[in-house]
Length: 88
Image 1 (cartoon, rainbow, N blue to C red):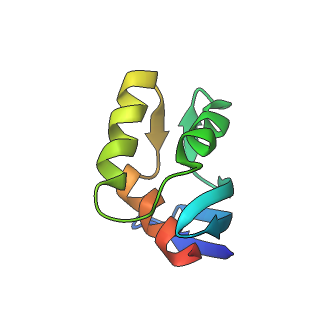
Image 2 (cartoon, rainbow, N blue to C red):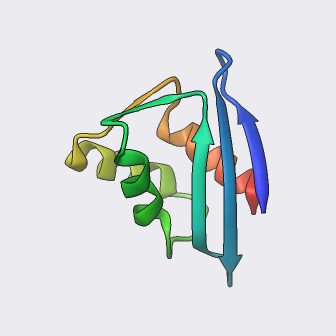
């Protein structure tokens, strides 16, 4: 499945994902936002695999980002979960 989501302010999140039984089985996140450190997008993708999209996912993601020291620039955790919902 695929989704393009334009964040308020103009940044684009592009999601390519596969789902099985409502759980994410594979995911690729691209777009014109920034993540620091840059290679952390792979850590976010690994974190999301096996999870269900729905209530609480944005909070879980925000917590993971904080623990990992990952900073999103041009989007928030909610923007990413909105894009995921669109891809499902």
